[in-house]
Length: 533
Image (tube, rainbow, N blue to C red):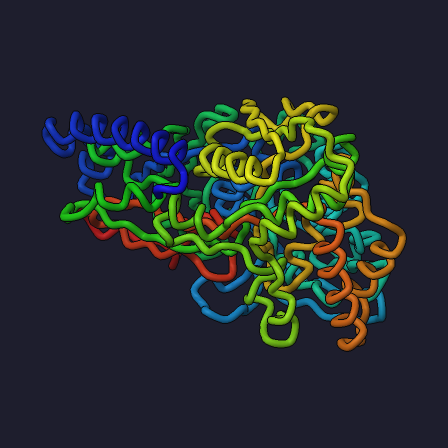
């Protein structure tokens, strides 16, 4: 920690604020508030969750954010599900009972009968086809990202019979189960959306999930209720509420005083606050995701690959993780996840390094002329993103680069004519290289659509091979080429995999689910249980 005075000073201030808030909380009678569960004597009556961020829409097709996945997983069903209790990836029937490939570019999907929507109507193939085809057609401009990484290879979902669909693809689809088990491919009621319109339906979706939406205040609060006619095992709680509490001090106070039953996004340096407290349990993990910097490669300051590579090499990731994350986060060593398995993870491509001399050499060869490299960050979105940026800016001074942190309220506030970098994350959406590459670095993906990432023709060709080739050797060769491209062109900087904890009150049994995306909150049957206070 001695290396970064600015980090230390900020962290001291943060800790003082947290400590003062907690001290005030502990001077009161614990718990200060009484929950619905305690009033009724039913531990499953209500679960109250304090979260760092919340989505502005409940249309899962329209938002693929970390904030949204906390809620979407619990209010949308998908055709196929992933076993969230299995340590190895396993798929299970969801709204589809059966699926099989019937032709080179065709799949047959048999739906579960008698599935009810939250308004009491019965789901049919028309609803499923509409839910997915509207994303393919990008009926809402916000569907472009979900389309690009989930349904880009799907030409159409055709209704064959009331409970039978034919999924038609443009090319061979080796990732069928991965894609159709993603909550951003959730199913909604066609009649309801057609009646009220996409915008209104996004505020109060009608789906088939174990919880239904009771209250939604965009970006502030979500209240869910158990859906009694759910086709599967009933939801564990009669009511679930998500409340926005962006400040860590306030979230900790909320669970200490009994106002919340669970809180999210607790960084490691706050773990000690809970030591000796037998009323609260911490559940921590290194998430399968990287916090990253996405370069705006069309920006005149950051359009030079040698500068981008120099900025990457000048970052001491181990020092940042040791200082900010108590050594619990994992510094990035590769543009990969070991979750891929032995065949598709390449140890010889662990080539992310800290090398000041090489950074200075590349900077001298670049066209950098003293301009400010602006890092745009959305406040209170990524834990410690502001402190990490301050540390990085200090590191860049060692090679002669001026950095500047610009805090904004939302990603729509980012001025891409000025921004050289924006903070972002690359979660692993499923256990395959495309679970991160297609989602974030597809030639038609989010960064490319924003003109931040400008893929070359050869990149597009290699991406197509890596994504669709049935030949495993060809695929491996293309994936290795792409990793070399990322290294040489440096369209982004991988920083670290964050370590964060959840805190839950006594009487709640919860484990972070397997095989699901980072920040998913598993509130379905078998994933969480209330056994009393």
